[in-house]
Image (tube, rainbow, N blue to C red; front, side, top):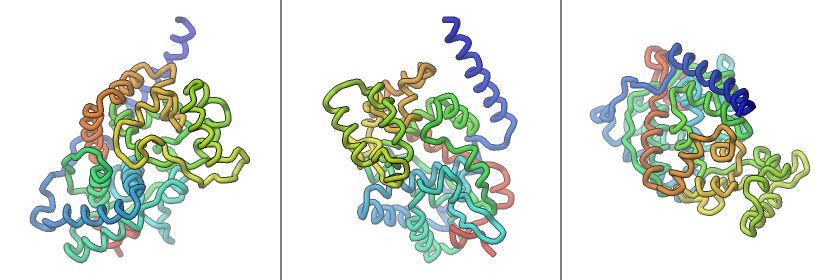
Length: 341
């Protein structure tokens, strides 16, 4: 027990420190000045337009749903949900697209642009890109079988971006559980929120660069044990992701190989079997420090309704991450990739 206590103490201290940081900063998943009827008069067709465009996008390729959800997550974890992730590099502004957590993992920008063009035709200068992306993420989840939730609106688009915060704030595939938890706490999100939001990986794809270490180092075999299904899946993974460094880095494989295009709780059942593709996911169940997270994983694996309910609640909290600057100095961009001139 003594060695465990010695290991656990710094972990607890780290989390306590992060709680203090959250309380002392203006960035949190709190109660921003958002309302459900924000566009009721100015752009009453906003939900219809976004839904129609997302239906077309997901019908053409179901993987587009995951792309839009990921864009929303990566936006909200940097400066709050302000559309900063959508900004292109210019002479006077460095965007977040080329930050290491984003450069190879973010797509779906053309979908956002198509929706924005439709909204500008119908309601010019009214609907922010940040709100557009938040609605689109909700619709993306619904279109692949996930839950519905009401989306509070009224965000403004930022006139700045922060590649530095993208590097610091965004969780990465091979980080440990304590680091991942601390990054969620910094945003005002709980451990429960972290486990629930990670469930979006049920429709996600992972690049070979992020999974190669696990499938060749013995980690996958250590957590999944020896059974024919796991062994077959491991062979498929190795076929997709060759061991030679750099070869096939951009190949992708489903994080939920059972139902890759359906939003369900299969992701958690795979974690129980030790078949989490990303180390950061599997640690929620297998880590020595995963007592609380492991219980939540087991709950969602057994109860899809509980997962859907918490995911909806956590997505609202994610969308509510804001900072005062975007409301004071923000704008409604005409083009989501560029600040208005």
